[in-house]
Image 1 (cartoon, helix red, strand yellow):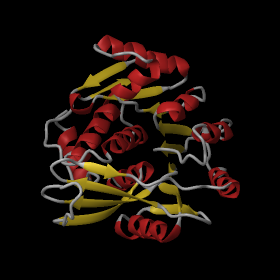
Image 2 (cartoon, rainbow, N blue to C red):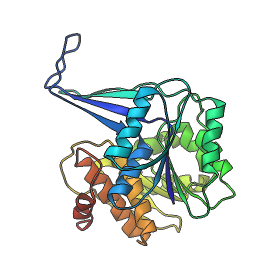
Image 3 (tube, rainbow, N blue to C red):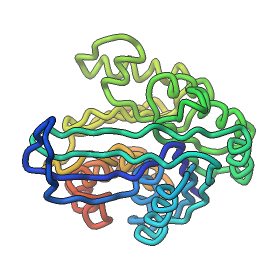
Length: 301
């Protein structure tokens, strides 16, 4: 079974205007509201590939109810959301104009009882299940919250994928996550270095493995990606060519694609190629990539 956890989901209000005039009244040309959240994106990509998952998340208020409606009715996802007693699921405003601008809402305030509910739900995870811990952690939970979850599941053979940055990622490493996906900038920040060569990528990727990470995909944007697997093998691939439409969800799609490949019996190398196809296909689309879009790219990597 695959579980995804999104602690800080959002409704993304996407607004398009031809030109944004600061300090003036602007009229939108187009708007759209989407369910946002890294774990939710993972579940959507897997759904598009025909693989089920259970999406866990915290939600609050009328915005939370709308987010749940969108992912269940429009996306067909299986959910087990926790509704908090106070506060609203955030709204992130994304203004697409001559200069793209984002205004992200604050995270939820989650009390101790609501935290206990999540840990009770996670007790059902068993051997060989997968758990995606994706995205930012609300301040009310602390940077070590992912590590607390991993510690709680330490005696179970759960493969945990951590998609986080900064202290949240650092705190998780000693608990041996199955897969992490820093980008080059995040890798540089962890070790306070400038990475200039492939050897540097390999060197500092291995340092992450020394700290506990088992498999590491280093995202290099349009340059492609680099994989260091738990057997000591290394792979690099350029990204497929295509027109960038929207990079939101591309990293989530990469992680989902890798796990899909492993579960489907792909080799690590082919799972890596597939993950790159998933990430690129989503970046070349307005939405999370479809199966057809993914395989069109995968066959050419």
